[in-house]
Amino acid sequence: MAWDEWEQLKTQAAGRRESRTHIDHVPPDGRGGGADRDLVVHQDDLGEVGREANILYDHVKVQANIATARSGHGTTGSTMQAAAALKSHGFQVGSALETTIEMWTSQVKAVLQACAHISDHLDFTRKRHAEDDAKIGAVLRGRDGSVASVSQLDTYFK
Image 1 (cartoon, rainbow, N blue to C red):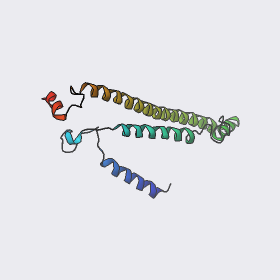
Image 2 (cartoon, helix red, strand yellow; image 1 turned 120 degrees about the vertical axis):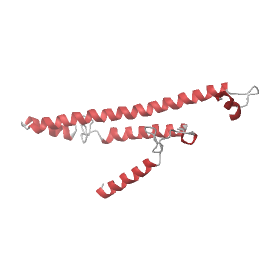
Image 3 (tube, helix red, strand yellow; image 1 turned 90 degrees about the vertical axis):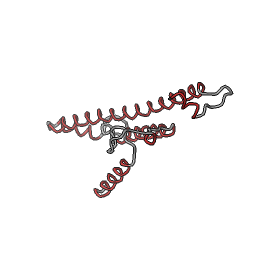
Image 4 (spheres, helix red, strand yellow; image 1 turned 135 degrees about the horizontal axis):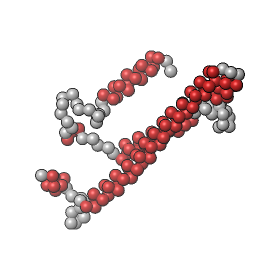
């Protein structure tokens, strides 16, 4: 990827970030969130984030595995073979390359675990919130089975 393209992508990402709601800081005006700033998450949003985490997991698993890259069998890859060959000929860089591969593999596994955790947790969250919504909906019904109105619910908060 060309450097100019990278800079353009960073600028676009920064622009998107500025337009989103941040929950890790207080707005510049010093006021907290109001009714117009409430955090709202829809089931579809959770599903989309979980799906993207799953896609990222699949890509990282295939593309970031340098230990078995170009092995053809899923065992020892060309980089690890090169490290072993260098080491067998007494080059210290062989041991350093092995260590690098081991550290890289460890970090890739951590990223894979994080992606899997995000995906699984969001699936659980979607399911749990759907169950909670059903329970709340069952409790907040009028005598005739209709959904309680907002004005009726508002009386509980005064």
